[in-house]
Image 1 (cartoon, one colour):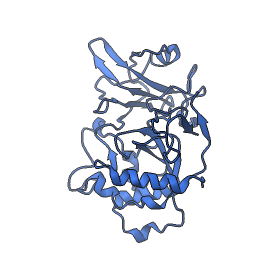
Image 2 (cartoon, helix red, strand yellow):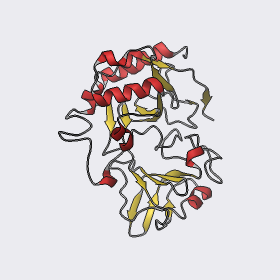
Image 3 (cartoon, rainbow, N blue to C red):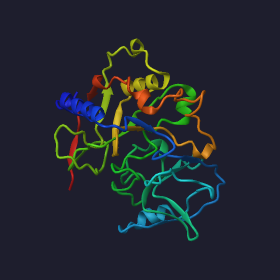
Length: 284
């Protein structure tokens, strides 16, 4: 456990208590739609529209198996992921737009060997890739840490969770993150890349949590929670269901059980979180 754990968890609890909008679980807005495509999916070029010159990223987007009817997530981030199991490749985009001139995005990444990837962008991700790639502010892939529809169908989350916070520490980031957009000059603020976990001795069954809350708590206890981004409120990410044409979160039989995400997470045992030891890096 990190020496800063009590202060960091206390600051997170205060943050949650003070904000009026969360905590939340992003689904149909500011989340991640994943388009899983077959081997024969037609390729398109996605133009990189950015003030930064990045020839290798543009080269990675010259042939993307992006469906013509794909829709990026609602909200200004415009996130979208394309996953092609047959090639073991993944492409992700920030502010993806389809116009009369074709597809373009302001930033993102591509991963050549998804099954062997560490989950954060770097030279091993794609020829010419750099740690600055990725649609998140930490260079952690936005596909990682996502509560997927498959997780929900199986009733179990077998991986770490991604979370975003309003108060992210400035000037430093923690492994596995590769960069940060943190702005708060406080040692108690969590840096991007920080990993939290629920106390492994906590008896979750005794808390009588809603089904989805218990799934999240079990994942937080077994695999942890990694700070991925800065956001307007504390939020987890569940897969955007737009590609399916339905919303499995809402309604009488929905995964949210007619509750709001804030209601679901109100019983989450935030005070039992622990901050694991961090390997910190200063921003160059």
